[in-house]
Image (cartoon, rainbow, N blue to C red; front, side):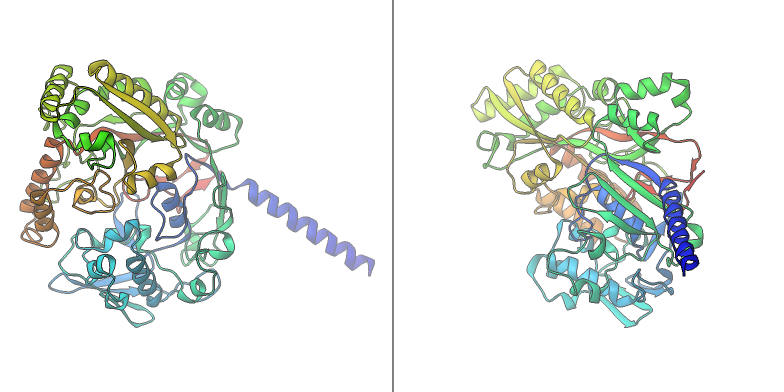
Length: 548
């Protein structure tokens, strides 16, 4: 009896030690802000999308170059008219052992359209063009009228209103991921994705520990994943680090394997022989910009609805100084509404935004022109001084506060009759204020969800949920409609030209003031290989990552 007890204790000790060793082999990764939601209908930020994609596979996934390759869909057929996709699903299962079926996609897609979350627009006629989506999202139509069906468990059919050339690439974006209907309905309302017990994975990792609003989150390898042999990491430990100083310290001490730094810490790492070999700069894709409330609710009774006033502010901004003196991580000063280095023409291969001088007449650091625009605004408005509040996130990287202060200084120095008051807040609070038109000026960002200029241009359609300035222009709306559902859907070159025309309207009216396209200066521990960095959709993917 004692012998069996001793053996049992030894087994427990051995299991515990093995578990500790495995935990030590988890990749430790910095997040810049808290994960906001693991619900695909509520997630709107890159951190949340990254963790969701760790744990759930959609129909397709990204390869190292960002192309769409098979995931849950082993293959697909496309009808001759380009409007019907028939996806053939592989044998895969959720972590609770139930199979992944076509109904999991039908349920998830109907739910997002019915609940009309912020990213539901990806289904509508401005992007994905899924049949019936507009009526469900915007008019409350029956969600069963959405153009999706499951003829059998392994066949998922999607009907589109018009052909969408990049549709397979949309499928690797988390908004299009499946949810197991039975599991979801078993939960208390509003609790899906709020803990490991209320989140079901079918991907490379499963959620191991997570409490909303806390700084730490852990995922561990999913041993029942359909492609488990490819996944070498036993897990990932995420930790929120809001300061570049703290990130650098955590990397030096070995507390974190992957961190993102900015500002003076980048220069410090470049000069330190023990760190420079670990430094890797990658394009993050995000465009940082100023958006202006153009309604009468804010900003001195709608003064920012005046295009000349917005143009004055835009021309007072020294973007080159922002990236060289404050961000300092390889980010690119940007002068277009669509940022560079993510969307290329299928016919010429040219970057849509390669020409950063295209809008030099309306966007650039030009103090004299800024004063001219300001004087024109004063004449039109009959007001000669202005006070605006600029909101920004205080948990989105420590360089953001520095950039906000620099913007304030630049505007007030060039245009002394404009006063900018700064108001820091959490990212969640900032988003809430922008969405509810409760702000004057906001320092914000947008990352490309798919490799097409429309991922930016679609934001400024009248009544789009991401049109934070509440700008409306009938000519612009028509151009975007022509590109998405109308005259140019089958004429690639004409569509490209029309998108240039639409961007011109945005820039000439200074709907936004673009600032810089974000790069990430990453420090990565020696022995870590195979992290895939992308400027589109998912910034980091770990399915091929190894840690020695």
